Image 1 (cartoon, helix red, strand yellow):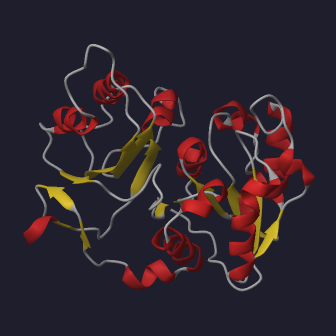
Image 2 (tube, rainbow, N blue to C red; image 1 turned 60 degrees about the horizontal axis):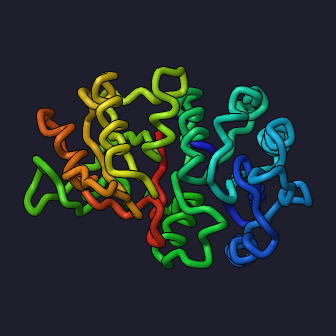
Image 3 (spheres, one colour; image 1 turned 30 degrees about the horizontal axis):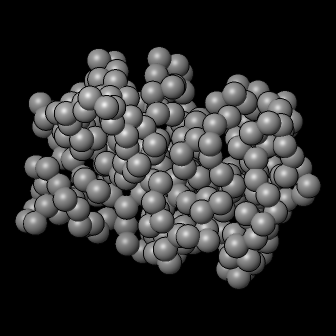
Length: 290
């Protein structure tokens, strides 16, 4: 995978809204953080467009994102929030100029669509928190984003990360991260791409999944679909992030999200890392996909 250039002092970070709309107040904390780190935030009034729940209609959102994808002076693109809408514009985007000057695409949740596109094109991207969440994020989450953007993560490359592992190599459930290529993202968004050219190649990769505000039986439906499609059979390992605000019906499904996931992969001989600090939580640590 091709790694975009790491950020240095005065690198420009574009703020875009490919999905749900956002207000000036909601990005203030992130803008201050970007400036405090020595970077330059780049955005204009188009960021605050409104079209029902979206940040402008599909053509508008695609044109704004295209503008920043094409700019040679932009080093990273922060998607300001998730929600829903990125998959509606992904086929309208042209990555020809992006290939000449690749930049870091940063976000999670609905931004899983853009991460998948980066995987398809052969570029790394950063699964991390977004400006809407900066006010409540932990210091560790924001520090991990800075480290990923600037290359500080490379200093720890190849070390072992502690995790609650299934069939872990080493003592105490230690996870062997060497030669680890991670793909994935939000389970619901991955499910929406199943069967399309955007669904990432999972063979020999670590698959990361997380989700928010879903019914338990939906988790079972999505994991069953991934299994039946052969997307779970040949992983190098599975990384399970936060599954927050799960719901159940009046008649309980009878399993937790963790139990469902465990059931779906128990026959496979690879490691599963549970409770990885990423997803819809304040301590949303950055991961470099690809």
